[in-house]
Length: 288
Image 1 (cartoon, helix red, strand yellow):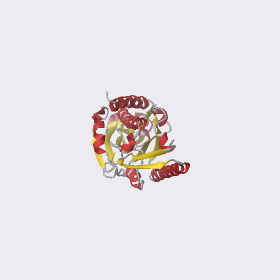
Image 2: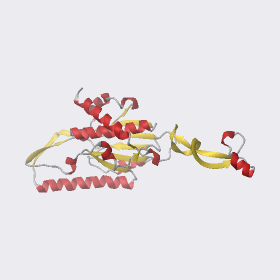
Image 3: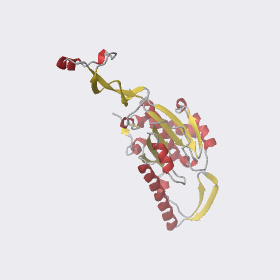
Image 4: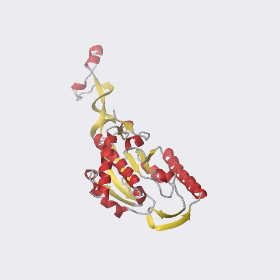
């Protein structure tokens, strides 16, 4: 087994274990779609009682409220909340920075596979997209659980800033973006796309501790994770580290502000904790 397959196997085991405890927040949204197990926004035939209305010829007599008829002599119908399948579009940023270290590669795959496991357990209707820069390719849901799709990543990777506006996201879907957001540009377009057309946006951001608080010393060669050709050498000083930390903090705040303005739930998922523990403070639901 090569290293990528081994990492995938570990990530899959951790993701499935976490999905036994936690879930994407499907229950927080009213759904419209095919028959499933979550509360919809229309009236249907589930066991969740919703309201009454007057009987009209042609109605199913099994739903007549006979107790109300005994009291009033009038026929009324019991209405139940429709049960539907959640719709979820999951976008995985496969830019090189998402796989810059072994720990971050593992966390990236864990989050993606957790989303897949959560959607599967919920009986959702998922679609998956791999994206880098302006490159996007759909991923067959039946292929997600097998590591062969990892071979597509190198061909997709693009050093340009990620853009998701060209992805055919479905109306009223939950849109999950898994990205470290470590690229320049105004994040408002990304946040608006996640929240557009009645969608519910959720951003899960894998992060290495070294990205937030680097332990640099001496003289170091800096290599752009998105483009190996861009290399610079710097003498490490406290001032350099301080400038980096300030810029990193501003960048994260810019994204957080865009997500808040567009009502996109978001959370940073650090690499230094087990997956379930790292997800515990994210906008994720606990399984009953």
